[in-house]
Length: 257
Length: 150
Image (spheres, each protein chain N blue to C red):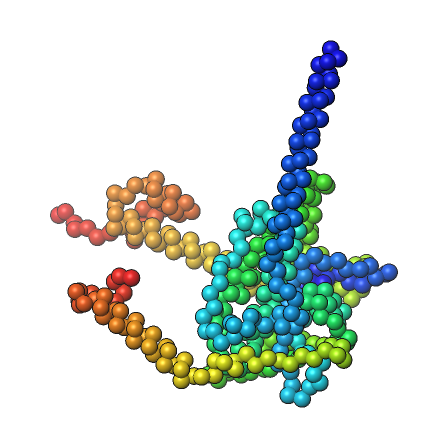
């Protein structure tokens, strides 16, 4: 019994030792790898300009933007570093573009700016995904900024993201008075606007309905043996029986006498 | 320190911590007469003087003594044909003072590429070569238009 236990302990310790050996090896590899890094030395304000060899160039070739799937593999630290690299790159491109415009020259390959911006947007969306996942796990909510459905000044429904104000809502008389009590929503101008706007929407719907109805009548005239089910599926809000009875759908025919 | 979410002042003024600032700055050519340690920037409209100082010191590691800002209003322009009015964007300009010992001279980016004739000759050669290539390519099939194949 004892021997078995001792054997087990011995085995586990040896494996532990082996493992630690392995980890030491990997750590050494990391250190070796860390010696080689491609970060540019800081050049102070000259970082706002492109590399000197690119100044007279008319065509500067660069790679593509970072994709979402590539960024999802990266750690938060890496994304953080990459963000600053891209930020500096964008500032550099803006500076060069501005100077080119000032001196009336063509800015070589302006799509570089779009590529950098796309990469930055992708980083932001990846970080956001992670944030949402973390918040959902910890609190059950997304942690995003809340969005409210409100009626805006011209009486239209609007999505509103609450933001910070220096005076609380109940103290803010300047906001409450015009907006809610006898404010813009009930004013003559807003009422008139709403009336005309509703009329516009209504007439659009009516015209669309009439258009469909006419089209169905003409279809019936030209193709009297149409498949009615297909027609019904294509134009669900048209009364086909009514369309069949109209004069427009009858078509020309020769009298038989 | 970003344009997405800029919290207002709170009592005790807690420090802002921003992990992904999206402010931009561009270094622009200064006036002809300018002290050598003053640098001109255009920057995001939301940036304050402190933001500009922190941005340069933390991200670019440039020591900053003083920052002054102003907002240049964009010009109003009238469309020549239709007569409607267009307004250009406003620009926030930052005048950054570096320490006395530092100087910055705005580089001349187009020093080398001034030789326009050479540039012109180069592009002419290029187009001649392309035309030659196209002719050679279409020798055996003269009726086919250029867009038909690559």
